[in-house]
Amino acid sequence: DVNPYCVAFVPNEFLAGSGPLHSGDILVSNFNNSQNLQGIGTTITRIPASGAPTTFFKGTAPLGLSTGLGVLQAGLVLVTNLPTADGTAATAGPGSLLVISNSGKLIQSFTGPEIQGPWDAAIVDGGNVAVVFIANALNGTVSRLDFAVSPSGLSLFSSKTIASGYMHQPDPAALFDAPTGLVYDLGRDTLF
Image (cartoon, rainbow, N blue to C red; front, side, top):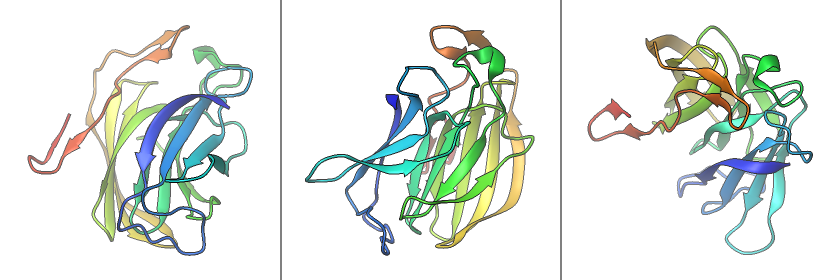
């Protein structure tokens, strides 16, 4: 895959378990496939502190791993995906939030009305709870999903749209022009 879309660091508190991920590793999600078609990338690359990069995760199409990538200290990797059938916005699907184990195996996939073409995400790790903010390209909204967290996976206990009315439109060069670039300021309790 090509077109790396997001970078995430494996935190110091990461529960490594028996998987290949270790604190200090870097993960990179890929949005395009090897033919450079947008919204068809299925891999996450692991870049260790020393040594060669390797494929940490290879999902099953249709996927298009977008800019929502984060690592929870419970030993889980979260990544959003906005899939297309042919690399164009005309065939884009609503996508999902994937939960991947520390060994690179898909263990959960979340879909629903608050996940409509996740173009970006901000992930707030509270240990046994996590908040995921998702910017949606298909409807110009931002959603909030609240989860209980354990090393075996996530349990969704609340989801809602927290903002709407953002410009969103297809763009052949970038797939979509839509809300992106989310960041959460814990000190101010503010999502930008």
